[in-house]
Image (cartoon, rainbow, N blue to C red; front, side, top):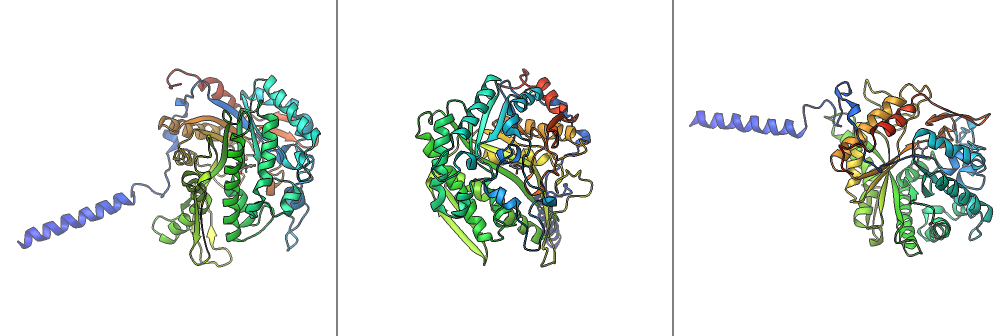
Length: 476
Ligand code: BGC
């Protein structure tokens, strides 16, 4: 009897430990999925005929002459300790002078082999004063759209890409729900103007980045560090998206228009597998940065709470069903680690052996597949509206492109409904708080002569577009 009991307890113990190990996926070195890239054949990729290949920019980053929006004001300021807001005290200024050079730039798109262009309409140029629309600015974007359509390039227009007029900023922008109608009025006006020429519309770009950088970390305008305000701004921006979506759907041409929002996914993975605080930290960060928006779009409920600090829960059914597609911007992930340093409590350090981009994050193609699966839960088609690398030496770009596109291909094989991919970005441009230091461009930009030169690493994108699209072993 005693022997049976001891055998039974040993079996139970082994079983328990076994399931525990399985649960913790002991075979993995790190909590997040990682591939051994030396064993991966990235050449197996195939993309369906009709897959939309594009490049992306945003107005403030390329046009030049944006001197009436929240960023132009921010670029002139310094932090209370005297540090300029933009690295090295730079400002966007003439940027790539894309406002004047757009015809040449649209020819560059063709050179890359891409057939679509994601760009944004600069609200501050179109509506410099509340309710007063500038005809010259409206005409300008007509010319851009005509030139795109003449070249057979599919336009995707973004309505809010981090910038808005100063008058809107002074009203409190998206801090206040009552300001949303101003945004909707702008959207209605430009939609009525351009709906015949634009194939795809993005309402808002990366609400979580806008809220985190501007209201939690204080790195973007208006430079606040207030979790409560950040949560409200995130919610209001998503609500603004939904209100704009429904308003546009009711306009002539609205029913057949394709309108979506752009979500950036940046995974927060725990740094240490065995340390619960790292997991909790990752969980809370993810809840704000990724899940709050996805949940709101799925269910119409916005909820975010930080125990003892804030609790926000609202329900707006109009947010549910406000997407014809979801735009995914994906760059990387971070590994979060809780530090015992009250002034600097979180580390975002990469793993040993990771290849870094010039931005403070590593190349992590595995995360692209994870992100595609995650946005698939919204149940609408996906466009990858941004993906790219800051690589001033151009010694990582080609490999980045191969591996990230391989991950996208794998996600598509798993059933993710990806319809298109836009590379960030066409040419080096104004990278927000980093100024002109970050080189994300397929083309190098000489900011003195405005000469653009194709980078060697960028040719990998053209090769994959050319060789791997429309082949027969992928359903169409
Ligand atoms: C933004 C772009 C930015 C890019 C690279 C995205 O968060 O939408 O405007 O330039 O990332 O950092």
